[in-house]
Image 1 (cartoon, rainbow, N blue to C red):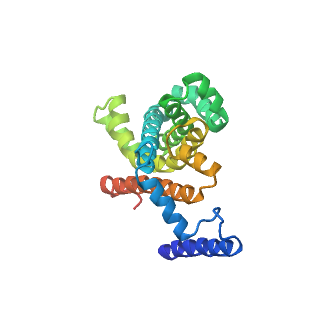
Image 2 (cartoon, rainbow, N blue to C red):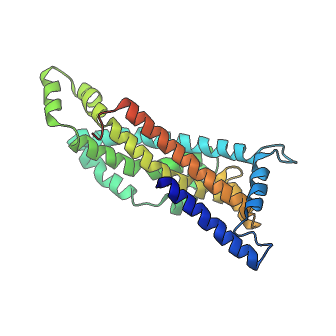
Length: 253
């Protein structure tokens, strides 16, 4: 049934494309199969002037920015989430701040990031990290506070564990599957923030290429880029699910 839904979506697209080209054979807004082939050939063969393969260069740039931004956001999100979930003082100090920060829209703050960190790699990393950190930290906070059985914590203290050992050996290990779930849920928002920034100031990357090609209505390039971006996000999500199943087969059963 899942495969059938994809077939229906593709069939609907080509039906709309056929109907549009019947009205206007030169239409480029809904490319035909031959136009899409031309677009795919354009982005997968070396450019005449730069000798670069657009898709590979953009994939490398966007992937690096996404990986660095998510890594920074995840690392600090785990630390702040554990502080809030394991210490009453940490919760009192950071809970309101994280709740408020999660309501700030990173895309609305593009100008702030430009002024604070410029328009190089640091800006993309800071924007993604700021966008995912508050929500991620709140998820870790709730998991550490409510998803770990108190009996395990009491037993660890009874066996002589220190506070740090309880946090790292009991609480963190128990919530690691939830952390992976949270990372999966942050991939989509992180891509939104990144593409918005690349559209605004990027000189390479998926957002930059979509902006340039859209301006001249080369939708036979834009659509393959959108599909590739979706496949990229799905592959990352699927990889995290495989890791979760392999490392934590007990989770969700």
